[in-house]
Image 1 (cartoon, helix red, strand yellow):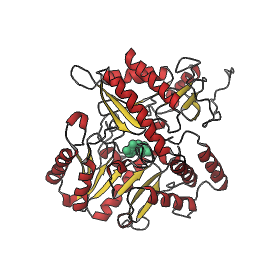
Image 2: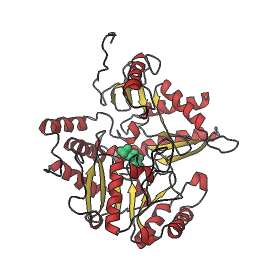
Image 3: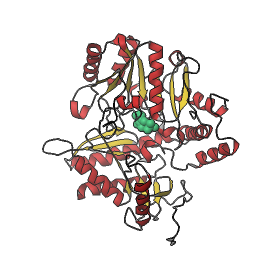
Image 4: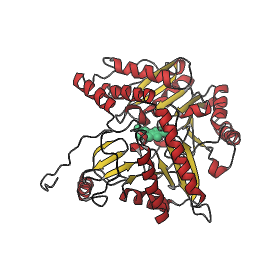
Length: 453
Ligand SMILES: *Cc1c(COP(=O)(O)O)cnc(C)c1O
């Protein structure tokens, strides 16, 4: 494209048939990306930040292509969303068919089969073989809000217990549930009441066993909140934005034993960990955890906005008719996309693929750690793996180094994301559609960035 008159940046065909290669034809960001960012500054609220300053025109498999013709290796999946791959052919076909049939009715006005089918699939796939019900929403935050509403209605109690380093969204209630002040909460209060934060199991930083960490958390709930006031304990089975913190074995099941004994609803927030991401359909499965309620979103619908709350029938049905819903929740196009994506998760071996990606990531990163003391910890499961970067002398978090590595990566054609309360975690959550060669090359570039910093 040579025209300088055309003000717009047009989309190009994407999907898995895009050349699966890292290809840089300009510096990153290139001139057309920079042009878009000038328009963005003038048109888009400053609070909406962009981590990797490129203008995307197409994506698929393991690559993202920008308006300058650069092809970047995708190690972020738009935050664990495009697990089946961007513009997955099955998702595209299902969306095209649905969008041409009808785009919206509002499920609470007139019903359609796709919504019920997604509910049936979630009831079947989420952990536990008890009778379940599902309600659909638009975003992860909205799912979490509704899970809390349902738990409160069911128990007649108000308190919600959450953990250090937790991330549950950016709406008012979910800001209160989220731990980290910057950037999620700062100046946006007052926050919703009856939210209580207790210590998470964080083996790298607390050195506790799962049982010890659970005892510490439960003791704090009993002393400071009271089981009889507690509607729900809300936990990410592996923390996402908090830095891919994998709790010590036994932590989650000890919490579950306590919630069951005290008629508290255990909500597993699987918005980031769900749908094959961790090498199991849901991360709870690694610990044999059967949550009362599960929230899902991100990976479920191949990039279309859809979220869900799935739980024990008697808990879910405690909300009165009309008490749950929303204009767009369970939009038919998003449901069609989800059904195609779920078909891919189940029948294209994506759970196994996530596990294999995890083996590659953990092997490479542990090898790197053996000769680089700045890599304090390597952790994660399946295609959800992170390194925590520290000052080798003190063990203190090194967010400056983390930022430099991620910047080096995108300037050299690899999209990698940061995370963590201390901003010192580089996280890897590639599309499960990435091939081994591209994944290896992406890791090479990130580790080069670490060596160069
Ligand atoms: C991303 C995320 C959310 C919020 O989802 P949105 O769709 O951004 O509202 C909630 N919980 C977890 C664990 C997440 O990773």
